[in-house]
Image (cartoon, rainbow, N blue to C red; front, side, top):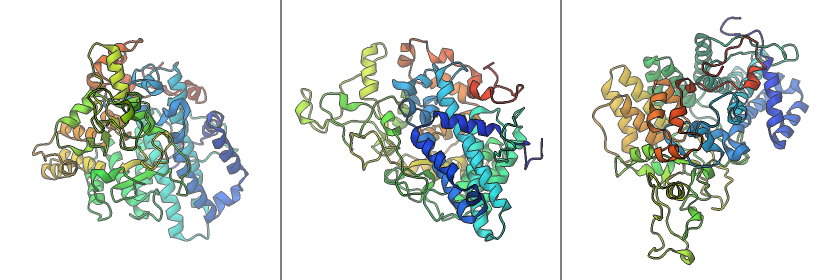
Length: 537
C-alpha cells in the first residue's frame, strides 16, 4: 500500500461501480453521462475552464441521490427511517424502519437503497479524484484559481469518504482517478482508520486555508462549511480541542449567524445560518431537478373529511414516515418551543374544506378525528397516516399544494449544528460556561428556556429537536456509542412495532447493525479477502 497521500495502487473498482450506477439510473442520468463522455477529456482535466466545469459537475452529481425517485424517493430517507426519532408508517421507506429492508445481505433494501449510497459516494470520490489530479498537474494557471478548484473538490471528496466511513465502516480510500490502465485493479483490503482520517484532515485543512467564507455562488463549499465538517471529523477522533477550535472559528467569524426559526427553512435557504446546501433551484450551481422528500414526511391529512391539500397544511403528503412519540414528547417538553409551530414541524392540520366539514367542526379548527390508540390497529393507522405531526424542512411553499415534486433546496450543514458541536467539544474540555452558552443559543432561538447544567443527554435531546430528519442523528448516536441503546428504547412507536407482521424490529435489532452491510454486488467486485462488516457473513 502506498503512503497516506496515495493510499491504494489504483481504484479501478470505481469504474465497475460507475457502470453499475449507470445501469440502475434513469434515462436522464444516462444522457448526462453520455454527454459527459462525449466531452473532450483534454478540455475537462487539462484547462482551467474544463476543471471549473468538472467542479460544477460534482455539485450536480452530489444532488443525485436526493432526486432519485426510486421506491417513492426512499433513498435519501434511509438514515431518517433508521433513526430513533421517526416512525415508519407505510410505503417503501417504512420497510427500513421495520428492519425488513437494509438489515441483511439478501434483502431488496440492501441491494437497492443501501447499494445506492455506496455507489453514489464512490462516484463522487472518483470524479473528485480526477479533478484534483488534473488541477495538480495543470501548469500555467493562476495559483488562486487552482487552489479554489482543489479546495472545492477536496471538500467533496472528504464529505463522501466521511459519509462512507460512518455508514459502512469497512471502506477503502484512494486518491487515484480511474483510468484505462487501472480500471480493473481491485482493492484487497479495507483502509485503516488512521489512513481514512489522515486523508480527511489533509483535504479539509487545505480547503480551510484556501476557501473564503462567502462563496461566489450559493451552494458552493465555503470556509464555514469546511471548518464545520472538520469539527465533525474531530469529534469522531475525540479531538475535543480541534472540534472546539473549528466551531469557535465559524461562530466568531462574523460571516454566519443564526436566523429565526421561521427563516431557517424558508425560501431558497440562502441566509446567514446556512453553511452548505444542495441546490435544486433551476439555473443555480448543480441545480435544476426535483425531489419528493416533503411528500414522504407530511401526513395524508387531505384524506380526512373537511381538509384539502394547502400550503398552510404542508402541501401534498403521503404520510410514509414521520415523528415518533419520543420526538413529539421532546418537542412538547417546553410548551413555548416554536419549532413545532409550522416552522420545522407541523403539529396540527387545520380544517379548510367547508363543503365536507364533520359535524361540530369549523374552518380553522385542528384535525382531531383520530386517536393514537395503543391497541386498536385500525385507529392508530388512521392517526399515523392522517393526523400525526409532519416535517416541513423540505417543503417548497411556492409549488401547487397538490404537487409532490419540489424544487426545494436541501440543507446539509448549518450553524445551529456548529453550536451543538461546539457545546459538546467544550463540555468534554470541562469548559462548562462556553458549552452552556452554545447550547442555550440554540434553545433560546427556539423560544425555550435556557438551562444551567449540561451533559451529553442534554446535547442529544437538543440535537433531536433542532436537527431531526436532516440526516445527522444516526451518525451522532453511532459516534457517541448510543445508537443501539436509543434504538432499543425509542425506534418507531410500540403500537406500530407490534403491528408489523414480520415481527417487532426491537427484537430483530442487533448491535452490529450500526454498520450497514456492504451490498453483495459490491463484495463480488472487491478482492476475495475483502472484509464484510461483522454480523453479515
